[in-house]
Structure formats: structure tokens, C-alpha cells
Image (cartoon, rainbow, N blue to C red):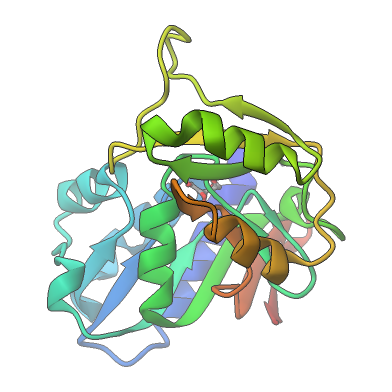
Length: 228
Ligand code: 5RP
């Protein structure tokens, strides 16, 4: 079974999970290739939800193409659940996210939700976060100062480049991303709060305060559901 099949399988499991929620509510939807499988699987059942809130322009485009209603988060009071992938997740539900660059909106929508349902394949499960470079979204003019502050954590900091590799990758919010490689994150909550306090940081892709509550994880034997 290849990784695409594992993503499809967990996307379908997430569809079954959210269809257990009472109908007529608004659902929070993340970003990435695993979430794309979830959106495609949920599309025939979109009437179960009164609408969605989306964590990126790419997700919004996909939702609209399927005929989902996409609401402005400012018009929504709360969400029963938010479904998203992860780049790494530990046994407590702490995650590194932002491989796709959508971390800021992902964290905002996650903070509105009662439950964070993380969907991934088992390659994303780790005992200690940090083998995946930690994304940090920044205000562009703060690149120099934030880089120097992040280097104090011991990792190697690099500016994420666009596909052309000629210019910086620009997020949906107009921010840039610094990727911090080589960390071993023993206390995700503390590191999240320390990095958040650096002037010029918009969002750090550590999700400890907004950690996952439910993990649906696929492997060649099927999908396992864990309550974290
Ligand atoms: C995007 C994210 C994604 O959830 C994360 O990168 C996982 O993506 P994929 O499902 O494509 O592996 O945080 O900002």
C-alpha cells in the first residue's frame, strides 16, 4: 500500500468520524494532501454541515469546487471540530505543522474548535518532535532578528523559498517562513510560548496549546483511532 492509499484511507475514516457529529453545524477544515483526501471523501455528504471554515486559500478553492459553503471565521462563534493533518505528532498529540505554509490560519481555526481531529499516516508519529524542520511564520522585515533569536534554540534556520527557488515563499497572509532544522523538542508547550514571544514572529508551527484530541492514523493494516 503506498502513501496516497494510506492518505485516502484515513481521509475516509475522518469522514465517518465527522458524520457522527450532530448535523447543521460548521466544520473547521485544515490544509494539505491528507486533508484533500478528506474533503473529497466528505463532498457527497456536505449537506450534513451548515458550512465550513477553511485554513488556507488552497483549501477554500477545493471546498468551493465541491460545492461546500465556506464561511468567514468572524461570522462563526465556535466549531465542534477541526480536521487537519500534521508533519509530526507525538504520543500526547503535540504536533509540528506548517509544511504547507498554512500554520497561522490553521492555528486560528484550531483555537475555535472543541476537538482537533488529526489525520495522518503512521510515518508522522514520533516520540520526540523536531526531525521535521519547525516552520515559523514571520513578518518579512524581521527575518534577520528572528533568525538570530531562533538560532539560540540550537537549530539551523533557513528561509523557505518559493518553488522557483529565486524568491521567498509567501504565505496567504503575506508572511515569510523560517524553517528550523535539527531541534529536539522535549517541552513543546514551553518552546511554543518562548518562540511566540519573539518580536516579528506571527506564528510558530508547534501545536501544543492547540494539540490534537483525537488521532486517526493509517498504516497498512487499517486506521487506528486514538483519544489523546
Ligand atoms: C500545512 C500543514 C499540513 O497539515 C501538514 O504539512 C501535513 O500535510 P500532508 O497531509 O500533505 O502531509 O500543516 O500547513
